[in-house]
Image (cartoon, rainbow, N blue to C red; front, side):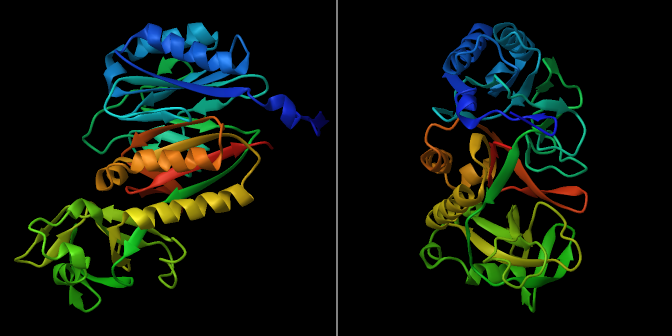
Length: 365
């Protein structure tokens, strides 16, 4: 069907033209070839227009051989993706074991790639300088240099911009913290050391607001505490989800300060938060329900999960992935673990969410 020069494929004809497969086992280019072949078999096509290929770090030294195997099997040079600590598809999730995952695009569907900014989805070692609809910082500054590839070649810039111009897209960023305080203005700080919120010293306030069940513990689970930085007007920011969570890196009883991973700009508002399993699940379920109602007729999904989300709640990746699959049974999905999720933009810089799950639903135009 043609409409103003665009080719529109009837929905029934597009079914099954995008598919995924994941395999675990010792790193081997032949395993990558088998993974791509298995994904293609689900579409009924012999060749692909594009392949998203994600590998665990066990494949880092064999990345080029893996790319060649994927390209030869799919008979397609548009093989793009990266190495990530953990990867997943709609049928399987791999954690702490060698794995390769592929999503193949056949029929009318494909994607475009570049190394610049302004993307539907962005993957790389550092945040993009301009807008990204969604994306991931693959590792922290000074962390592993995970390889990135596009169009069948290792990308020296370690930046990958994915664009799907003929698809609708809508996404969510789920954090799910339970607020321990209301937002308060940052009154005093020294670099990354937060000294005062409102009229109170930062550390005594945090200690006073700890969950009751934690107050007699010999060691406070600091990985489940966070500083919620408000985005925009503090009024109703928590209820509306207009915040991002930052990890607490340390405390100083002498100076009564709390150390954060970044310097907060002047005029910031902040609240203390608790990464709570029930609230995390509730928040994701609510956002998935909203996305099901308002999102596009789906073709596939892309998930990006931050390392700290899994660190704070060790089984959260499996729970998150189970909820995604329950929301769209049988929908092709692929995802990876990253250092931080990139979401909505503020000016020209992407906002980073270190405790988040990002999910983008791509659908029919």
